[in-house]
Amino acid sequence: MPVFVKAASVLGSIVVVIALVITLLKTLIAFVGFISIAIKIIIVLMFVIVFIGVGFLVFKAWQGKRKSTD
Image (cartoon, rainbow, N blue to C red):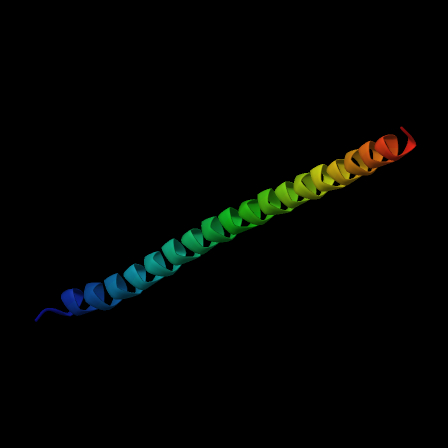
């Protein structure tokens, strides 16, 4: 086997490993971005649910107070 085939084989293997690592890192960065957006959406939804819950409790207390004064 010629020497340049062995060198290309070793060099090609290194290039392939580097390409796989780069692809893995890009995928991990995209996954972390997706997870952070999902967490942000969950936090906003929880805030909205708490806000609506507090509003409902205030409305219920206001209705109860109104009924008790009548």
